[in-house]
Image 1 (cartoon, rainbow, N blue to C red):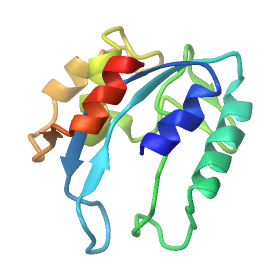
Image 2 (image 1 turned 60 degrees about the horizontal axis):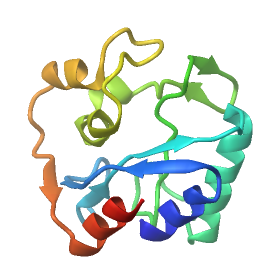
Image 3 (image 1 turned 120 degrees about the horizontal axis):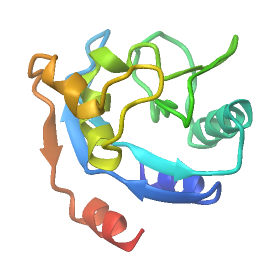
Length: 147
């Protein structure tokens, strides 16, 4: 994940949330580590998606099985305004139901999510506790503090 964040640093100014450990969605596999990165960039939504997909590929992501094991999974959750194309929808269509995405997002962005009309914190309040747990990783904490 740190390599992904370093690659995102090249696209603009970043802030990084804490790490969270969650149960996987889909087939049996190890728990996931989740975080969020706020990225201030001049790239448009489609250009950003292209760069994110390249970062995933560079880190060894191979798209085989939906929700199957993967080295890295980078999602564009929200943008400055709602966006919809054949390749990308912002806010992420499943964001409002995903505690593992909303928890780190709430650390970085307290405003109303464009297109949803609620904050990440308000959306979290509507969801059951799915066992999303903060991971105190010394290297990750150091990365967050130096960003």
